[in-house]
Amino acid sequence: MHLEPEELKTIRKQLNLTQSGLAKLAGVSQSLIAKIEAKSIDPTYSKVKKIASALATQQSKGARKIGSVMTRKVIYVSPSDTIKTAIDRMKKDKISQMPVIKNGMSVGLISEAIILDAITRGKTPDCELRGIMHDAPPIVSFDAPLELATGMLKYCPLLLVVKDGQFVGVVTRTDILKGYG
Image (cartoon, rainbow, N blue to C red):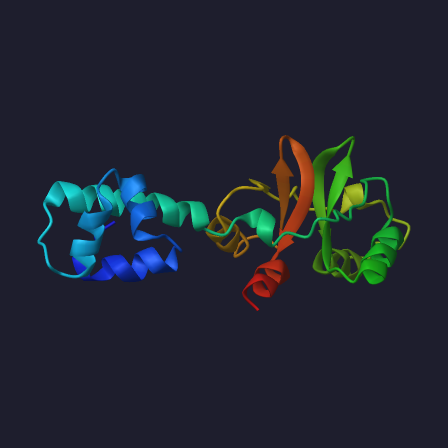
């Protein structure tokens, strides 16, 4: 992190840090922080580096996590469920895609688009999902940065979220947009 002394006060306040709080994190004195912010001192490179490092650490701690926007209720189907079952569940829960789970493991993905494609290829409502489902969606950590999900969702419609080895939710593009709204 490159830090101009003039930016110090602005960044510190954005992170809700006091001068003494930042000083403690950076291993410098509170008076040094005050003097830098007042532009009454030209700090050494090593001091600015310590302060910048402390600010960068605080910024990464404050970064939004996937767990903050995910949908906690994981609605899913099994490979032996039918197209009709999937359609009924999507309508009931007002969703457009969901994971296919077998024995607690993600084995596929089913979506409105996948079902429409199957129907146009002549599949009937009693066709099992195992015959039409796509590859399982990616799995991401509950504590991963939101930017990771944003990037991944450009390539897949849904991400499964895990915490301590257990599925705890899903993230879709809609969840990301709700998080910014």
